[in-house]
Amino acid sequence: MKKTILGTFSAMTVLAVLMVSCGGASTPKTSLKNSVDSVSYAYGVSMADQGLVQYLEQQGILQSTSNIEYDYQMRIASADSTQKEVLQKEMAAKLDSVNQINAPRLNEFIKGLKEAMNLKEKSPYAQGLSIGVQFSQMMLPQFNTMLFGSDSTQKVNSDQILAGLISTLKNQQLAISTVEANALVQKEMEKAQQAEQTRQEEELKVQYADSIAAGNAYLADNAKREGVVTLPSGLQYEILREGNGPTPADTDRVKVHYHGTLINGTVFDSSVNRGEPATFGVTQVIPGWTEALKLMPVGSKWRLYIPYDLAYGAQDRGTIKPFSNLIFDVELLGIEE
Image (cartoon, rainbow, N blue to C red; front, side, top):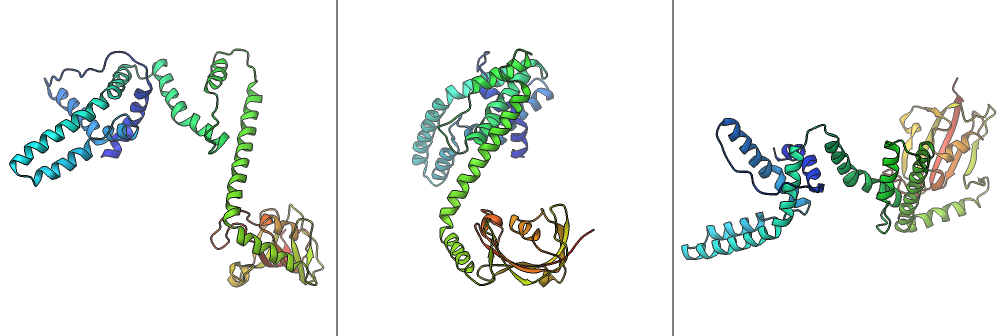
């Protein structure tokens, strides 16, 4: 029940909090002349009791009094008559102190609430307030995070956001065309996402430094073995069986048998163990596979030693931890028509 009422009410309460309003914060006179008055009053009490108070506490508009009341009620329940009177006075004094602290913010909230409830539902002013709340509470923080990540020292310029928005709405001359604006936003968001991804990967590299070092040492030693070919990309392979069929292209679909392990021998995937070959596009697999497949004649069986940057990189895929080098025995059975 509480979640339902809070969900219904939250948009209006947020809107009200942000409004600069008039009309006062006094409580309307209670006058229960009929059943409609009574159920209306009851609904107001219910909304406040079953969600709104908690919401205002979460938003920092109200300081909670529930802990004070609970603590004193527990103490009063076990006290004698003299102690009860003292505790009741103490509780009343503390509640009054909190109420005085709450009063200025609560009055401001009530002013906005009353004005919002008196607005016509579809008036331009009401719509502007509603969208403004979404901008300030959700869209701008999200945009800020997308651009600057966890860097709290940088913030988007809300004045310039409004300048661009209003100029567009009024069909005024734009400093940046709509096409250029959309392209610029997309470019900056992609750049920010890449920067954030790089930052996260660098943090993970510190965490997995020992694993990365072990993987690098393994590939360095492996490259010295007879029959192992190391390509410029870092991909290593050795030919277990020569094939004499055609070589796949990017656009082909291939049928393969494979057996995948970590460098410590742990098996993470195997069509061989399942007893059923796999079929997929040459470019639908990790980069190390794609590079190898385009070099393999049909009928070949190769063992691939794939560095993590040609595999799953910083991804955590369960058994395959971030920055894991992988080993695959790959048998190219054919190219699908």
